[in-house]
Image 1 (cartoon, rainbow, N blue to C red):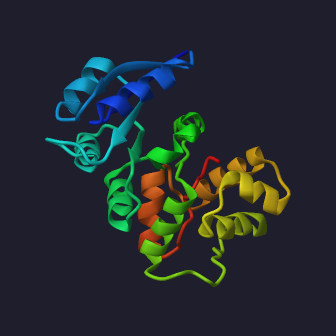
Image 2: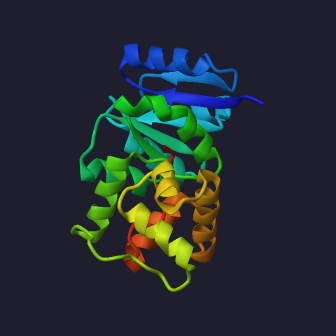
Length: 219
């Protein structure tokens, strides 16, 4: 079954390239690609997308505001932000608005894995973005191990690797386990902390000062 994708990107050349790149795979169906999300509620009703790829800096309505509008209307469709920005404010605002993941435009070779991961409840973030989010929440560099009493020794080890901004593959290599095992542990961490989504996990992490628990990376 094809995954229906809705795209918002104001750069026409990049938008067309993204459409062509994704349509090359039989896994995806691009239901629409627009230069801005000014009619996002109507678009969602018309196209019923499974996932949205969203730029941040767009005319009329920016990506962060569009995600906020979606969530305010009870729409929980996964949204992956695609952007050139690497600053803390845009990263923080996008995730807190309800974005499911965040990928830099120069990292689009990983978009297939990101889409699969977010549809499975993950939160794909590039390593540099993950680090910035963690440091933003902490307000400082975290040099001491992060542990939580509800988690097992292995889960805390994975938590610490996530805090370092490590990807699934890097965590798997460091702990001598498979990537699938890393994914399984991450899901257990979500369950033990009683969070059901990336956005909820980030919010709870910030509120309880348990930094970086949700950073489910994909490469």
